[in-house]
Image (cartoon, rainbow, N blue to C red; front, side, top):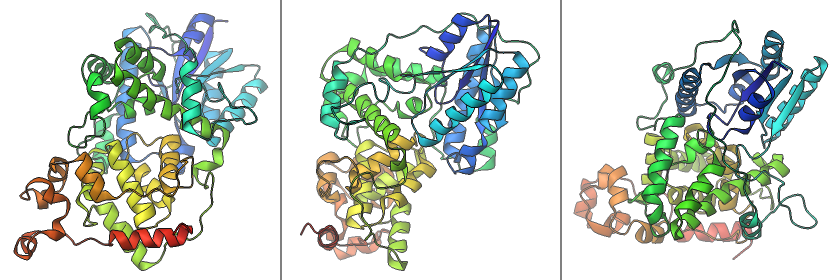
Length: 460
């Protein structure tokens, strides 16, 4: 067989890429193909931040391929039609791609398999490319997936992950294949809507960050990962979402570095795999309650006003507002901030988790369907959390994870002159001081919100 197609999806890298290595091992020439999927855009899953980061990744991928004698072929439209056309043009016998986990990805793979079979070609789908361990690789007795993290983590930790594959030295691409220009970040930014502080994407940036992380920040991760102001996280989540870095390689690198920080970081990678295996087994959980259904979410004008205040970072609770403003500015939010803001919306304001999940997907550069939707469900008490009625108190959380208020003052400039931990409860400041602040009073009393939640959940 002379030619194979490699369809890149959420695996925009050359290092540790099983589909690419398999294609190169089976064919003399390879068509590295990326299709800008009309279906994803139509469903609203291509907002400006992710399109800008995607453009970075595609530009870097194309440059990496050109360094090896190849190039990236880019097309737009229906993935099945475009892959089928590219395979026909190149007379490719096989198409290689990474396995997806969503219902949409599964349906797309099946459509592509059938279309290629009609043409006498084969689809090769590779597991453990977008996750460290493939969904379904470990399952509990009597079920097709783990519904609780701790036993999943125990089994996951006992598995030997596949080895890391080197990047290819040479990639030969057939001549004459039609391709659109590789999209640029600048074009996306001109169209508007990109967060001012959005990070740069691409495999080279991802590998630079992973190298720096394993050599430095990882050692401090266990004790510092919840420190809001310290921001001692890896910030690898966007790169993992787009596959610019391999989750399997990230685990191997962390374990090689060793120490308690490595164990804590690998646990977070395991959480990512956990959510992927849940979504793979229960695709409907992207939009429907995974476990316990709730129909009493607040709605109406007051609820809408509360949601707007939450989105704008004007709830009157500084740590919540700081996190929401970080999201607006960076297209990213500290994980502790995600927990706080999600708990505040779903439990203190008692608004449907889907409202928050949709807003996050509109802004998050790492807006991964599995992690975003299932983390929201975990916090809302409709998902896999074994303590569905826990409510995070934003004031207590602020004093614990932002003790001197540095995170709040960074993102809420109206309060930058309030010293120390007093910044977390500005309603307690003297009236004369409060009068000078352009900052709202709390939109809800925490005690009232807790009482409403308990009544609605029948947990009072």
